[in-house]
Image 1 (cartoon, helix red, strand yellow):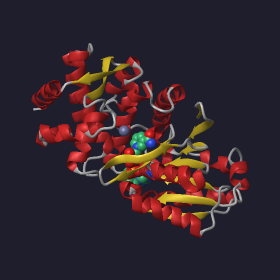
Image 2: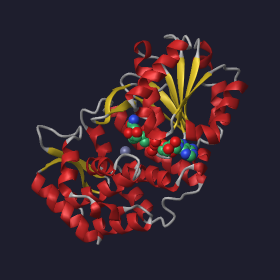
Image 3: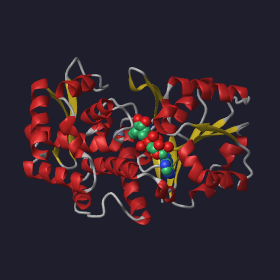
Image 4: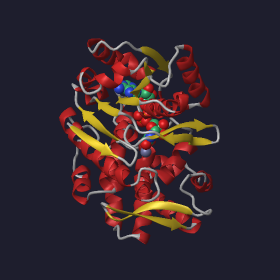
Length: 362
Ligand code: NAD
Ligand code: ZN
């Protein structure tokens, strides 16, 4: 399975399937053979289970490489880790003719992409994602690291040269990472397609799909993202829709301390909150929101967590969001499932919706 992402600056393919690493010997052979050095930046946990699959594929394609191991997950997105990546490349005589490969989840992809964007003012990189969530993060060219002041605060737009996505690597993902990735898939459905949203909400297996079904669903999710990125690479307009559920989601994530509750679990809570706001500003029915909350709960998402969060802290975190415009909070809401729009929301409405969410969860 495959699709092409076309942006103003470039065009590249996303391949999904257990066999996609053979493409190192075909489609990506030229890119890698012409490189004077190939560097793999690997998430330590993903690597401990699966790195040999990547190494064997590169060896089979006669492509030499050097390996730089990153700490697992978000720890790799620090300024210190970013610096050590650049030092690694310099110490190993990488040049402008070198290529990087990201092997890990969104954190590894974001870091590797930003290193690729900045090393010698920019070199190509390939994404080899290992998490479900990375169907979102590996496509679209947003790269970043975190600052002590906030997440993803330093970064750039740098599109990958290709994405090689193997769903058979998901078998080792912890439960909460499965939930995390599937929340982003549901987000892609909710901002684009009523029927698709309905089919996911009716699927009692969610978030545990067979590998075959997962590939099909992820490809649909990637198509939504690719279409949006093609029209709005630099987030001047509709790319903002991808932030559905994220204004409150990021605030909940920051409140609990990054990593305690996974990103997508927080986004699920954020989407429930956005649906409540959409009852006021769009045409979402209370019945739909309630159904969504029950669905999230039954699917194992920690929706109850919001009950322990104090509103004023949430508000402070929401105000730090990149989507704040002239001091006002801006949310992505839905006219109906599949029909997103952006809306400025007053603090008073935010607080009302917060109390309403808690009363509907209890
Ligand atoms: P992650 O990269 O932190 O990975 C989650 C955890 O799973 C980590 O502990 C990791 O070590 C482990 N892991 C990875 N692959 C594994 C595997 N196959 N088996 C077992 N464990 C594995 O998290 P993520 O959810 O993939 O990505 C989240 C990051 O992506 C965040 O930093 C977020 O800001 C970023 N993101 C970026 C974009 C974008 O457009 N660039 C979009 C969404 C999210
Ligand atoms: Zn997200």
